[in-house]
Amino acid sequence: MIDILYFAALRERIGFPRERVETQATTIAELIDHLATMDESHALAFADRAAIRAAVDQELAEPETSIIAAREVAFFPPMTGG
Image (cartoon, rainbow, N blue to C red; front, side, top):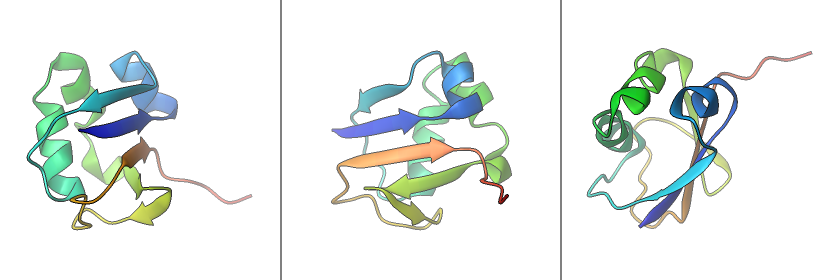
């Protein structure tokens, strides 16, 4: 089981800020594939993968980053400076 956190527009599209998911995914990309198949709101939230950033245990991560030992994965839109 892994805790998934959603922020900003992703949270709005999915309808809740967090969930616990059982998955066989080993990378961020595989996890996104899994989540996108869960239901229509997840599919919509993950439709534009270029507009999604992720963090694994509070460290920014790339799609190929392993989640095998992760406790938490967070998804959020790209950050802007300012």
